[in-house]
Image (cartoon, rainbow, N blue to C red; front, side):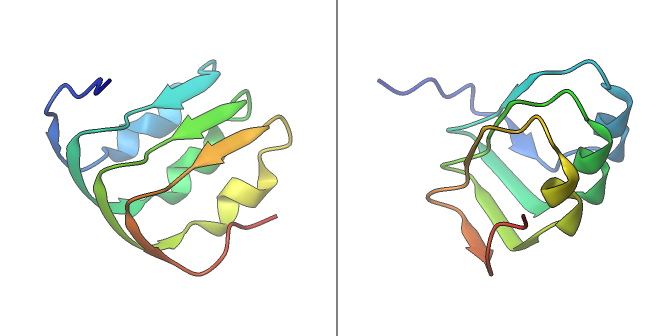
Length: 85
């Protein structure tokens, strides 16, 4: 089942203001760009799902500082390197 909303564009740096966010799921869209360092400001995140988009580059090292993060899915993107720990 595809849950695509056909969102396109990039992730705004304003994402860092959503400090109470626990689940960040934007899978199955047409989003581009990189996984921003501002994601590291979302200290309550337990899950990130950005799979099935067109993200590129490496995953921001700030993701490794998310101590509550239990799950991350970056499959079917064009990301390189490893997931920071």
